[in-house]
Length: 139
Image (tube, rainbow, N blue to C red; front, top):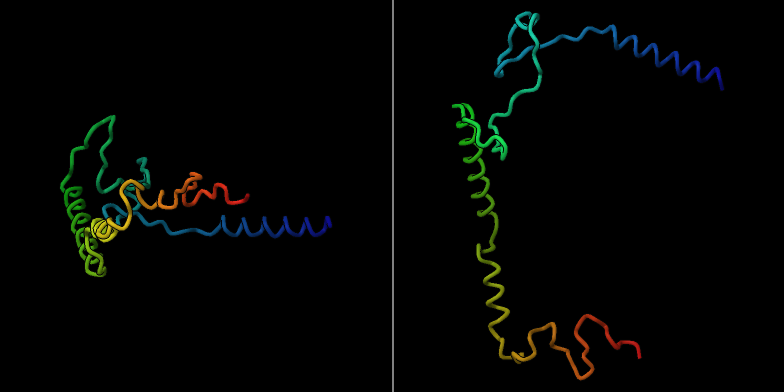
């Protein structure tokens, strides 16, 4: 058992040494253009890109918009509009489907007395049983 553990440790250390000695080629990019990494040698840089558009912050308010942010927001709005139009083209369902369903359901309202209050009270009887409650089911 100990020999097996030593073997696993030796293998792991060997793998770690191989990974540590491999030199990875660093690529520096600013505004989607490759630049010489030596330019940043003596400066502190964070490798996290700023968002294209800064969202509204209730504490600081709205951030001033750069030309790049305005173009990005226009692009996102145009793409959203195109997606919405494509979604509308695919469906056969009218925009006011809920109103249509309500009108169909209430078209023949005269079949249920208004005093009954609708389908949830339709089966109400002398014992006070309502649809779906199962009250008095087992006697």
